[in-house]
Image: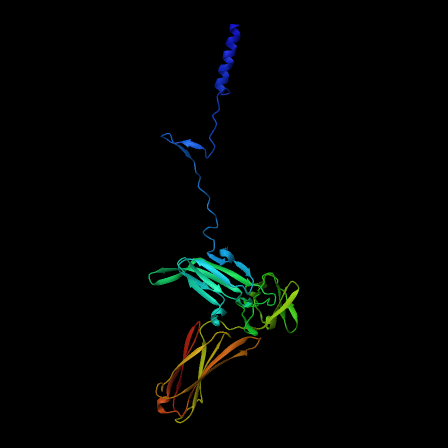
Amino acid sequence: MKLWVVLCVALLWVELQNGDCQQVKRRKDVGENRIRPGGKRVKIRHPKLKDGGGKGQSLLTQVLDKGRFLRLGPTTTLTPGRNMELRCKGNSIGWSYPTYLDTFNDSRLSIKQSDKYSQLILTSPSAADTGAYSCWVIVCDGTECEKDHDRTYVSYIYFTDKDNLFVPSAIHFEIVYLRPDRPAVVPCRVTDPQAKASLHREVPPEEITANGTLLTFDPTKGFVLQSPSPELQGVFYCKAVTKGNPQISTKYQLLYVEVPSGPPFVSLESSPDSVRGGDNVNVTCTVLGEPEVDVSFTWSYPGQDHRPVHVQTSWRLVNRGMGHTTRVSQSVMTVEDMETIDFGNYVCKAKNQHGETSVTTSIVAK
């Protein structure tokens, strides 16, 4: 009997050493009450995860009926005819919108600034109002203010109209210039982002297939030609189809240009070559340049402020072989009944958006 008791005690001791008979303490779950020093129980609070889109969310919203608001995304589709009200949070806000609303001083557009937000209202919008609408926060340091590019918000708004699949244009025949060093855009924008658009040559009649690389379609821009070539010259139009309803855009004249961008290239000559007192003289200043780049002229001459002269300025487009199109701008100064004071240096200064060039010629008495 004693031997049996000894064996039981020995087995119990081994089990205690292995921990099998120890009471397992339950681990408190995360978030359960715990005891601070001092005897108070506290609840462990874990920080809430912030919404990842908080900082990047747009401050540009559309006001709906009954005081509801819709935060606008990169694109928005609205119904024409219904007044549009946009708001942008901030006490100093700038706006941009389709340029023609400024060009025609459209009274349908109004902008108001309050303490907490700026409000843009467009009454009776139509398909022609399709375009990018954006707002931004204006930051000022004293009297100097600038646009905060980190807080700029834009939405391209389509005013979808089944009778106007293309954004109407005041120009019925537009010129598109093709350059070998930059993409060109045939600006047939659509009012319905779901419309299927295609590009067509008028003569010979053919469709130019968009392949996703050399020719792509962007509903907010039109057809983009990545690497224009002389073969793409001619008259083109766009065709759009939605729900079986086809429509044709305005026509576009595509012209190929091979004139480098830069300050004007100027030539200056006078006629006749030899001049006597009493003769009439023409001094012609000529600039060859890009077709759509305007050129302005200013003159300096010996009899300035003392003798009357006549100046006539004009420009025209010319083809210079291989179908290349160039703009020829000219300013012609006419001096009648030459006098002694009129002899000397005539300076023509031509200026464009890239810079200016001055050229001088001398007129001497023979």
